[in-house]
Image 1 (spheres, one colour):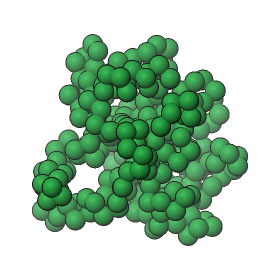
Image 2 (cartoon, chains in turn purple, yellow):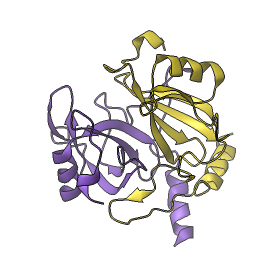
Image 3 (cartoon, each protein chain N blue to C red):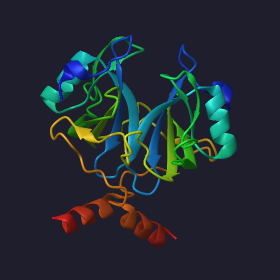
Length: 128
Length: 128
């Protein structure tokens, strides 16, 4: 994939869905500019662009909760990324495992990082 | 959750990550406006706003590949949705199971809908 082909929006950003590679839970939706995409590819850790702080943001730089990039996928339109990661701690600034903690029906969702982990490990063992 | 609290962007849109509730694979990143969010809640099928066609879009209306909504989650900032679905066919307009088919490292990723399904079923049985 050529970074030049990525369709950044009018603000120079592309959405990046962060998914736990083991549990398959979606952790965060963040945004990357060209520089954060390059940094992510180079360091194999997630780098985003903070829209609120308007700056490059190395996830976990201050909290220690970095995310190791296992795989970086992109979609059919090349205007969205899916980043499969090994999280080194909570993804959410609230300290929660995932930012997607609330459901429209039930107020609080109990998303656990290990919910599918054993099956994921089992699946990998069988596949090998 | 009150729809009035959703932080739609300056175009009146909010990103919606569509995830297969069974396989946990991420299928699509689409966008919803207030009307499509209301339609999704009302019909329990996914409705989006097509940015290219600039119109309300009932996923599967023409192709038959609708998505039954199992759960609708939102994030800590209330500016992104995670829609867990039971897909009635391919999510991608290319006919692929997911729009996220290509990897930055390997050209083509083989994402299968049944990869984790048996483990998901097994997990549910154990949980019950």
